[in-house]
Image (cartoon, rainbow, N blue to C red):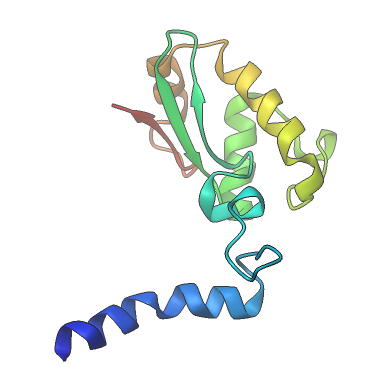
Length: 123
């Protein structure tokens, strides 16, 4: 019984997120991965290919981390669509991808090393 209790406890946040709308659902009530920040649907929570064919992961889910991410990428927040505008995410993913392709994974790692941008090289 203790293992079942533990599984319920671990799953509780997911169910609360579904109830609150934090995790969007599709027509059948299941989580919709295409519009969830937890499933790499956003530009600020994704994996990007770099100039050398290697990858970096970006998980700047909170606004304060997003600002640091943009600074490291040479972008200004006021020149971009609103971060939470889901309709703009595909366009922003494409733009971020173009930027990440300008440097190698290790160059991006050096730019974001020691910052709170939530960017890390994929090893």
